[in-house]
Image (cartoon, rainbow over all chains, first blue to last red):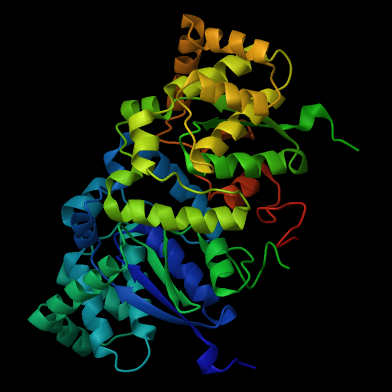
Length: 232
Length: 232
């Protein structure tokens, strides 16, 4: 029997599809959404803005960190069961091409989706798959349309969403969500904000689920709650 | 019945007492040492050298990261059950005063300790307590002596160790252990290197125990293996 809506724990998830660790955290939170009875709020935002405004540098700028990240992503994706394969040119994909258009597109999907967030979830996943699994472009309108079609949107809806994604209100919306993240003193993605006991607790990265569970009074049973690797 | 020595898994733990996350990881690894049947090798090294040579910057240089670290350490220390209380002036303790003398001192303790590593473990813990729990100096000979006495060394032994810590061989030893860490392409501490299946796997930070367990074929049951929060 589902628990009452009033007991659902509000968790805000700030992400950008440029960030592979955000994809890991996204999939894990989607899996735990019902298990932990979360009111999970997707917050598509722009990592470039967060890095710039917080004065942070991408980990890839330190060669040993970059090397570690490559190894670590391989381990983590295997453990989390997310089919991540880095693009052939990680630097180009992450830093040269960028995801401003893609995140405006996701923001427009969120704006169009009157009820729920099924489409935001699906579109985000398809975009992550393109950049972090199949090494495909995410900057061109045709690429965004392809991702949208796979996510279940129609060609007509996508035309409308693409136009909307270039509008000032959507540009402003993406800016304001990015600012919300900065207001929580975020410095990178994924940033997960758990609202519990009247406090907002920020967790950075995809390696704090055990602590997050502790914070909201739930149990972490590994990356696959349907097949727990550990349980109480 | 203890398992045979030959099946023990070699785990190298590179740390500097300037690093609070290293303290967390140190205590957790000490608790799991027998549970996971580890041949745990303490590798006191110099974080300043690693940061410099890898081109990394301390997280404290980004204000939002610094703020997060303060909050995160509070949560993590509570969860891990390590009595961490940041010094009144974190910047001064970490970046101005530094730990070069302290880490040479720990290196000298390791050198003097013919068999085992009980003293290195105790002296490291006492030094962490000074800087990260009771807000005390770790740069002066008197401070190092005090930590050594609490760790069970005699005044005579400490005088010898202090002299030894200023010698060229000990300076060189600290450099060479720091270089070992860099050879594993490390970029910060704690860095834990697990030798498993003929490979050396580097784990950075104190939030990868679940993955580390997976890597060495063991089970992570939370920060207190004697009182598991989760178990198979």
